[in-house]
Image 1 (tube, rainbow, N blue to C red):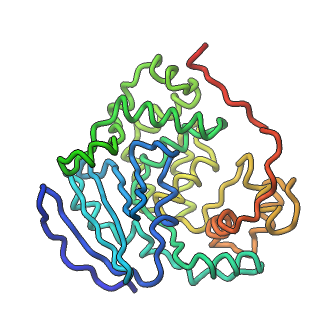
Image 2 (cartoon, rainbow, N blue to C red; image 1 turned 45 degrees about the horizontal axis):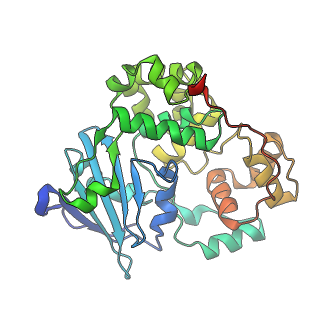
Length: 321
């Protein structure tokens, strides 16, 4: 069990601070990187000094979180905004305190070596569904560059500037908090079009934000129930639900099916078959039942991925139509 953190304290500049000592090795970059939606994500920054900034909309309101780790492994966090106490209270869960990496039993040498080389990998748990669900919907059946552009444009246009220190350095980060459910519901059709989001994806987001509270309840559910809850929304299938719950729930078994590239990557790594489909991928991951998402994370970190072929998906730009 992780050691108990000190009480949250007030700091200068209207912020609150907390320290926490993780129960084992912790690589902040590996843990937090799934929250990054592209190199210019307005809700996330990773700085060269090892500091990570994240913004989100908590049940208590918008908040900004700054996280860093010292040489002895102690994590220091500082938060701003109405959501600051909520973010600091859930800091250990965000950084994988609820994760159980020792439950993973590698059956392939590649995964054993990768786990040995990446001891700081833990699966994060944000406890927030909509912040991962909306960008996951934007990523449906388009290139990542298209999805990242749409997320960036919509958040900067309809989100709010992130709370934080009133200094020039913070302002230069250009951080924003994503819109609330009501604001998402009021985005006009032509703005979705300008962001390159087709009517199918925008309609799915609008259906989800209308029942945002019901969606957020999935963060406290077991994986089967959470998957079922999200998929009650037309337009949300297993791919989108898994991509969301990997982040919101820290779901170690939420394997992504229906992905364009993942079956070939898993097939290549575990069976030297880059043409594997979902069925073969699931068969290869069967020995890791309960930990299949962790297995795929380790495969992606192993560096054993098939050589890129010609692009199978051509980027589109419906905004120019």
